[in-house]
Image 1: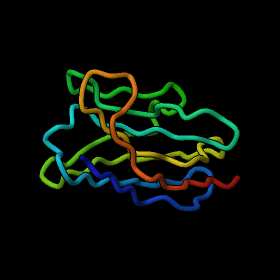
Image 2 (image 1 turned 135 degrees about the vertical axis):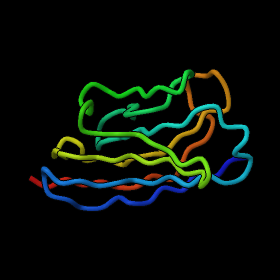
Image 3 (image 1 turned 90 degrees about the vertical axis):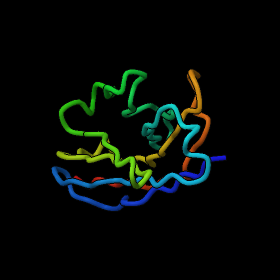
Length: 118
């Protein structure tokens, strides 16, 4: 099993920045890929960013140029730097990890709330 614990959410004004962290523990050697999802009230959960099979980064169109996914393998931690935040970025952000070539992640974090005020 793999445990994912997010941190770094909070309340920020539009135009501000936040950095989310996701610390992985357990059988981390089984992780194939990691990424971030978000779910706004009344909306479906959507993929925001992830590392692809060839280690490049994928970003959802609305966050391109504003969000950056990165990781520190020594710390088993993945980050999501969010700049130029907008009210529509308000959501619960979830860290996710894939143990293989599946569409749905194998493991999920508990989520961290990000609220952007206008």
